[in-house]
Length: 292
Image (cartoon, rainbow, N blue to C red; front, side, top):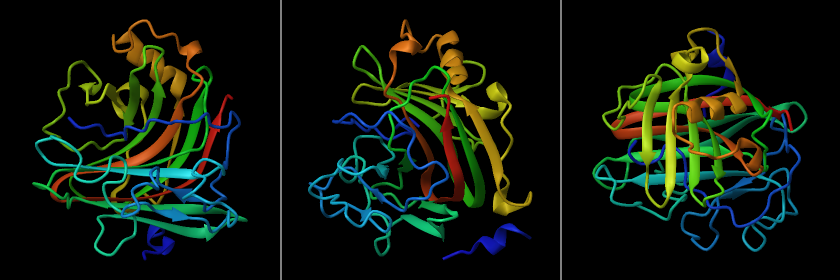
């Protein structure tokens, strides 16, 4: 396990198509990441189901998946031809299993807050395709006034890789919408269709999931991640998600969706790799959401 000391010296969706079957709490949960309480979405797929109840020992993720507030993570693994998931949807690989290309680590503790280590390597199960790996908060957010704060360090990277922040919600017409902000620097990705200025990708990624990937640098002036912590460690990202929504709509991607009608958005941080030899590892800390 790497230590924090080192910091001192798509045609398939980047997001995860998560269909939430329950209503989540309206309040903001676990600002600052003080709860090492996390699991994936599908205990009915035990071979890839993962959970960690360190700070919620009374939780029962297998039999009462949504009964306890928690962070939830998902992994989509797709072949290069994008013909389908290599493993169960949102659980393409088991986190932290021997030989798994997705790893989740924790530094610090509940009292002072955790730093989360997310590692992804391009070792997809068929034809060296895509692995998307995201960590979502356990909240229902209103888009109006919604902001988020993240502090992220890019520890290592190779090949085609991306680090992103995301807002995911179900539109009134029933479609799933992913508004993704790609953090610079952005890898040259052959799947990006670059339809408009500042838009890296826009399209239906399957199953009624419509995604727009926006350039964090070009449209929102977000700073670049520093490979290997070369700029001194963590970079702060404060995102106004109402502005992100407005930008996507102004560019013609959200139709007549009224942002005031969306009250069940989720926020995520994630990585993606594509092709053999690609990898990305980030640390993130001090997450919080505002304006709710």
